[in-house]
Length: 213
Image 1 (cartoon, rainbow, N blue to C red):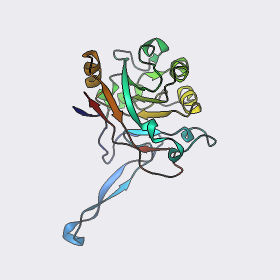
Image 2: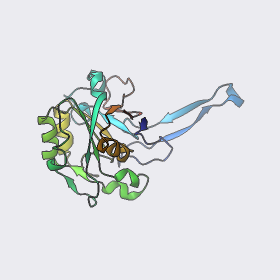
Image 3: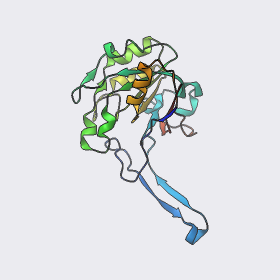
Image 4: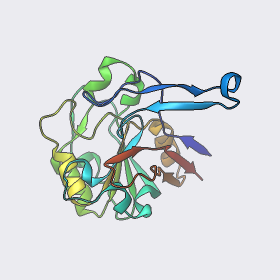
C-alpha cells in the first residue's frame, strides 16, 4: 500500500507567516502555444517540504550537501494526538520510536486543520524532545504540522537542535493516522520524501509517500 503524505500545492494555500505566497497559473496553453505549461511562484518551504540545516544557520549544510539517505528509509510514528492547541510535545512521546537510522514521524492530528487559521495553533516539539531524537541517532524527523517549533516563533529550539545535528526536518505532512494504524497492526513502513535538486537551498517542497508492507 502506498500512502500519500503530501498536501496539494495550490494558489493561496497556507504558508508560514511571512513566507512567499503560492501562485500557480497557466503560463502556456495548448490553445495558444500548442502545449500546457504551468507557471509556479512559491517558496522553498511551501506545502509539504523538507528543511536543510542551512535553513537556520548559514554555516550548516545546504540541501544538496546532504546524503540522499536522509530522505528515505524505514519509519516509525509517534502518537502525539489529542493534545490541546500549542501544547509542547515532550521526550516521553518519542522514546518508543527513537531509534538510530529510523525516520521518526510525529502525528499530532493537526493536518485536519490544514487550510484554517487554527492550523497555526499546532503542538510542537520541545528542545528536550529534539535532543532525545538526536541522542538516539535519528537524523530525519517529520511532523503533520506547520513547524516543529511554535508558530509564530522568536526562537527555534527544536530546529536548532535537529539542524545542528545535520538532521532533515519534514513539515506539513498528512496521513500519519493511516500509518499509526498500520504500525499498530505490525506492518512495516518505509518513507520517501526526496527534494528538488536545488543547489545551495535551505529546503524544498517534496512529494512525501509511505510504502506500507
